Length: 232
View 1 (cartoon, rainbow, N blue to C red):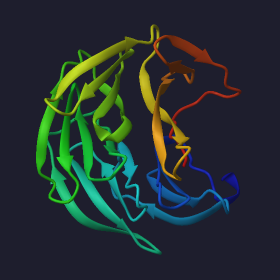
View 2: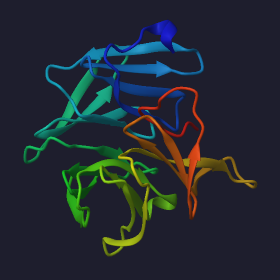
View 3: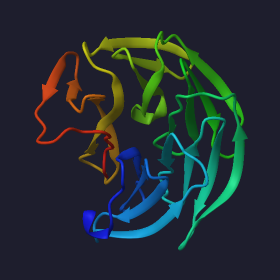
View 4: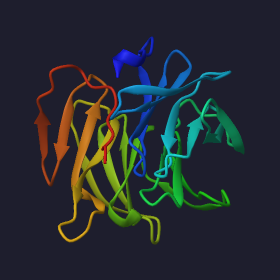
């Protein structure tokens, strides 16, 4: 993707669509880029008016969320620019992560130690997940959107059940900050649909990568990793 231009200062957020072969990235330089990863072409470049903390692309590839310190804004992705369609005002926070669910009907937003779940279409808050002792740095939806993984800066990775908004599992990656989470995608044998596996990939602040599958296993990477997402 470097042939279409690179971010200056690193990638802050990374997300991909399911219905289209596109990836969006938020750079520390204030630019949002949307790439067609099959053609290796940058389709759209948009400069934000203020510093953003994270972004998430809807599975349909037609809209995205961008998180700021005091708001989460929904944008439609047009051919040439991003168009604002909704502004969700929030209390000011220095840590903010956003993620659409796999089906796209829900999205989750963090505010320091707390995670709030919203309806994508009405933007109604459906519930809150509380329990992290350190700021939440990463989110990832589980199979069938019934669970949500969250990683914090103290290395704790929790799995939450959305029905009842309760914590059902916890693991710790010692000596790292869980700044990135993703579940591997597997194609079902009898259909063409992709479903998330139970295996969770964890990216640490120092650039290391680990696999959580009942135990914590390090993954060898050629270069330090700053973000991860599962491509369809």
